[in-house]
Length: 404
Ligand code: NAD
Ligand code: USQ
Image 1 (cartoon, rainbow, N blue to C red):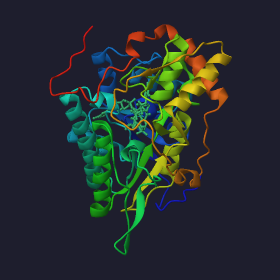
Image 2 (cartoon, rainbow, N blue to C red):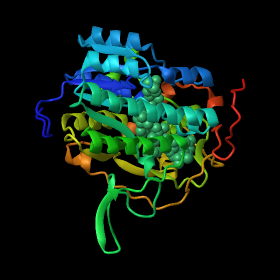
Image 3 (cartoon, protein in one colour):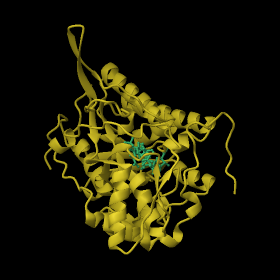
Image 4 (cartoon, protein in one colour):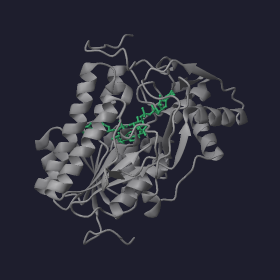
């Protein structure tokens, strides 16, 4: 594959930070399959959150060591493992010096908005983990791998829901007769989403100040579970979150439909977001790596393929469920979040398409297979985890413990 970017040679070694997680595991396998040399960096903290909150993935997932061993036995390909915390700069430095990545894909953050809104300590943890982790990655690139291209997972939620079209990272504004192209205004609506805004600013600054090359992928909500590689063996299975803290909208609705739980539309259900299939997450990251940013360039791509409101998703899942003989009901749940429930939403997403993204749009057949997947594992569902338990307004400084 030809690189149309600006680097002198094709990137070969990719460090996948957060490679034990939902997006990271699928991406690590995909890149390994495509011939990249891959190293996973992860401190497995996500598995710890599950234990602490009493949650579990719908799909059983084996240890990262077993996952990587299974991949090697099936394909002959090695994925290196660096188990540690990227907030620990000594650890991260050793990983960079030993692996010498051409690209670092950074998925390694606390990524749940509700988790960040549980209490003060989780809010502080989220911003510390995410902002300091990313700062450390920037310092590691500057110190040890100046040419390394940072591919950072941001989020569409950085932009919020403005009453004008959302551009890809930047907007040209004429003010008092003068014109400039400026970062698109950010209006995030959780301490988690805000951590991504802070990351974007730090990354943009270091591109300017140090000449770092970076791509900020403002990803929408991901759905789906199988990718070509994770479907190869049950020990390669990806995680699938359906609980009220880590589960995301469409994945949650499929599991709810499978177990006969009413679909949990929060408030009026007009909340509209960009969505994409996990098979497109891995494709987008591969495209960003194969077409690197120039030294000093801070690129922003909006990474989603279609927009849906929560009500749209509920209707689609209800119709798909009916075809499988499931009687799917919807229940409006008082919205635990503070967000607009009826709003304008029109976000640009052309840059990844221009690089060659061929989207897997949400089709009846994909919904059928996701629903069938959820039905297959429905005995593992803990229905007590389905309703939302975190309130944006009620959070406070007092530590919230999990009651049994
Ligand atoms: P995930 O929780 O499944 O995976 C994140 C991984 O990062 C976990 O394995 C965790 O152990 C690791 N991690 C966290 N902090 C770390 C640290 N300090 N050091 C080392 N490892 C650490 O999350 P995901 O759904 O795969 O999301 C990955 C990235 O994509 C996140 O940055 C998230 O914000 C972004 N994103 C996700 C979605 C989505 O719908 N899942 C949508 C948009 C953006
Ligand atoms: N929602 C419901 N019912 C549910 C779950 C969610 O109505 O049962 C609503 C939420 O209120 C929200 C929308 O659906 O308006 C999306 O919520 P979500 O939980 O699916 O997604 P979100 O909290 O935004 O976070 C997820 C990922 C996060 C990523 C983000 C992309 O967890 O890591 O950054 O999607 S985006 O939404 O584009 O910012």
